[in-house]
Image (tube, rainbow, N blue to C red; front, side, top):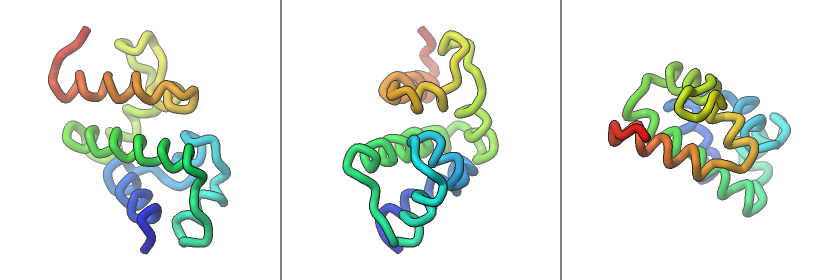
Length: 111
């Protein structure tokens, strides 16, 4: 199993995200993510960075939520994010804001 495949497996286990979900979040095709998972391709450097950041977020969420709840949290609008979903923020390159919010949740500090 490749390093990327292990990251995808971790994301799947901790947040019930399927390849299609990861593809959507990273602006990739599901077939591309499937090839990464099988070791037939490797993400470009910027996409790999996004994948690693997504894994970090999912790992942090796993301390707070069960996998299905983490998935729902990612795709649901959040009041403290001005009605945006973390998934849409990730898609729009605002992953740092999502990471900050997740850290606030973990620390139970709301701004």
